[in-house]
Length: 355
Image 1 (cartoon, rainbow, N blue to C red):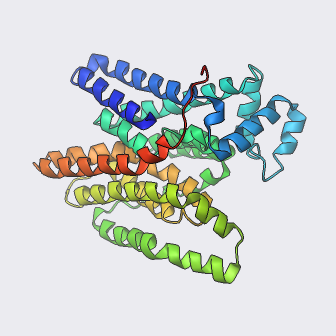
Image 2 (cartoon, helix red, strand yellow):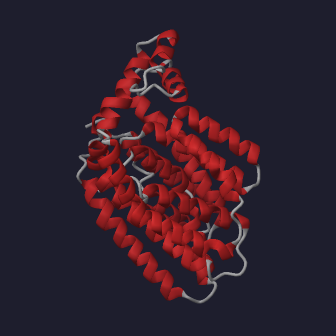
Image 3 (tube, rainbow, N blue to C red):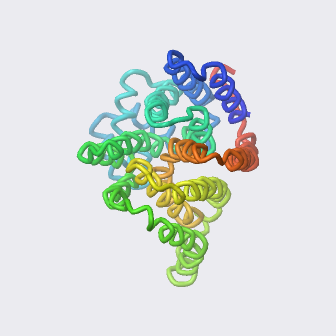
């Protein structure tokens, strides 16, 4: 019941603090603390396969290796320490403590701090933003994807720089993310995305994304199976089909609602246009999740904008007296959240470190 507990806490706390700006910082701090405690205080053995056999194993190597030996592991493409940024983070933390629980707990703190800061700065509905964070599974990344989780932290900072037209700073954050996980370098195409500002072209982009989502996956599957004979195909198909498609349907739901709203607005600011384009790219990458795992990871970097874009879209819609659409879309969103995500989360046993 990890998701359910967190959602209930977010909604109740929002109800108690809404309308009082003095309590805004307290609200975000409490949400931040709750996320860190739930993710960080679990038993380290409760992570999924990549966490237990990859990241914890890599942490043990970092604890028992010198700096020279650590750089040797970076040359191994199958090592959890192959990306220098993550390897350095592990080694620096190991200088403080070699305890696995310490590593798991501390590495969550900067990630959730950046997410909460981003929501507080750009969202117009904090509770809904945090629910989107949970729905798109950014809350439970520490269960299995520590390197992408750390990379997303830098990507969020890059997105903030893009919104504020500080491209040089955005490049620095993107390159920093790439040192933690090499797939994050794909986010460099935000320079192209940012130039797509003409709202009248969005229907064309929408058709392209939907076409890729519906037909592109089958084309790539055919190439992998019948032409390349990829041995990785079956593994990625089995490993990512359920997880990827559950996220895909929810991401597509966000995107359709956002399109529906922004296409009917005459004045859309550059920040919303940029984030909408990123959301489109994320959904397009996510469509290929069942085939190549890297697409799954790449989608995380673009989809994170939905945590502030979705509430901003609903606010613009409310200004046009279409409350019924807001209520219905929010209801459908909650249904997708509980139907697709809660069963999968409940399948994971949860024990605290002190159990």
